[in-house]
Image (cartoon, rainbow, N blue to C red; front, side, top):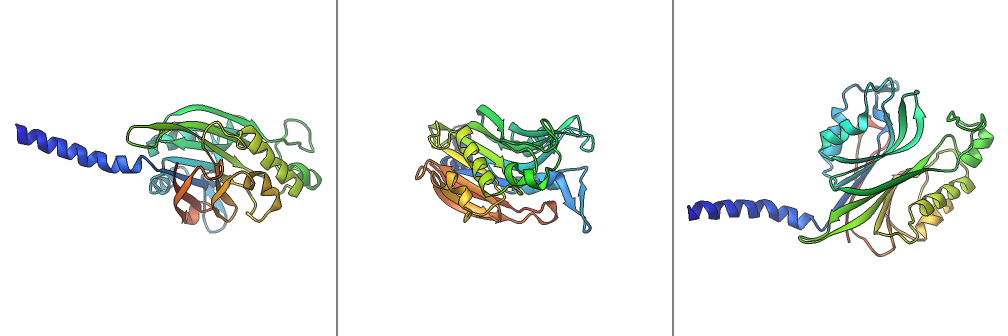
Length: 274
């Protein structure tokens, strides 16, 4: 009986040790998912079964995932995709950041998925004007695109309770956005400023991470509102991850994960700790 109990304790201890060592670190993955449109050689085709996307994301073993170009609930989708993706990944805390309605019944925007509880969340639309007037989300004319961008963009955050040691948890802020690809330098800088202001990244209430498709490079002067107050943790092409305030987070590792035909963007992943 005693030997049996000792064996059970040993097994439980062995199971807990990896969790204890990992609890002090956080893995964040960011990916532009391109609305589940898979390349078919001549273009893109919306997939009916998202299992390949589930497998791709699951292999990253991330604690938090941020996604751009997420379409859900539209007639061509057939059903709401965020809940389905979160359920299949075993990440039961999810937040959708709406950029605009699509197809009359669905939406287009960004997503934050988490293994850990979300205590608070919020989102906002980035300043935008369409040449057709208020409430239009069609592609802008070239004149309006230079100032406001091609279409409506958004920013959002989730405050998440994460373990930082074997006996302590802390709240962190995960912020996600997708900035415009046609807006000029002045408009892009304004978008960065709005992201910083909305999520309080200049003086965040909690240690914060910002991830997403910024549609520009780290050498762009328009990125100054973010770069001046953050540590730039990693980027690949136009996808970036930043941490706030400066010096708060330590990066353990970084990685690009090739997505093949699943998207025109590869995913990026960082492992960090407070």
